[in-house]
Length: 361
Ligand code: PEP
Ligand code: MN
View 1 (cartoon, rainbow, N blue to C red):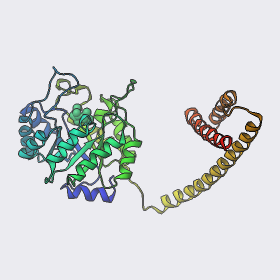
View 2: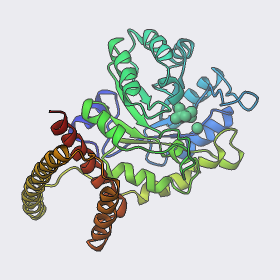
View 3: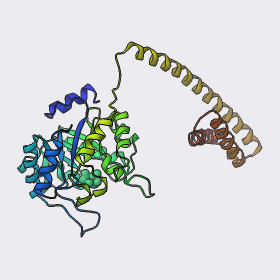
């Protein structure tokens, strides 16, 4: 559930959002009939804005490339018939101009475009003096500064109604996702820009419908403010992204199953319980830091002895033994192997750094 701040932002955009801001609709505008049927089917469900892409240059040329500006007219007409606002993707100043002409209500900048500051700057220039909300998808690669940079270019051009969308990142290795979510990146974006509504696009993260619910639920658990989901009246017949689109009915079922989380509660019971546990955690963290400081003091002393005896800082066998024995002990204590292994690699790295300092002194 969006915090009060985000609820206020959505209402400034003209959307009285009670819980989650919902954008749904097909990947691409394909025909007048397809958009009209989708809009009329979505109308009965929880949705604030209908989406459809008009320009769809694919990774390689030759397949369906989108219907172009005529799709904007079909989209707007469908939206009007169903009393829904409409959104589409823009990648060039011409797209922006066409959208403004057709009365499109919200724009989004696609992942490929966010990756390119030249294109973002051109779009920002074209948006000067307008009042339309713009959502910025994360760039293709997990580079937070590119994402932040796009937000800043738009802000500097005077775009006031801004939001961000996490749609996952491209990875070289195959994963179960089409685009892997890296949650800490949108979370850091939200920390830096608390007034920006943060949406998740599970459709482009998953690339299929099987994982959609769990990714959408993840986003809810992480307090995302909205969802963008691809919904098609007849997914198998879709001209793009057929595998990841839901029917309107499946969309409504997914929303029904979602558990919307809130950031806090007034319940005394909850506040007392969580307060006591947090005080306990604070105490434990104190102890952890005391012990870490002690451990590092020890490492410095070891470094003195190594220096005196001309012994190498890195002791591969000892390091191997530490990782193995600590992960073993950790697992006995129900700590994940990977967590303990990474923790000790990190501690060891710091210990090496400190020992180098002592030896070079
Ligand atoms: C889309 O939303 O249809 C799209 C092309 O998304 P992305 O920019 O996330 O690939
Ligand atoms: Mn798509």
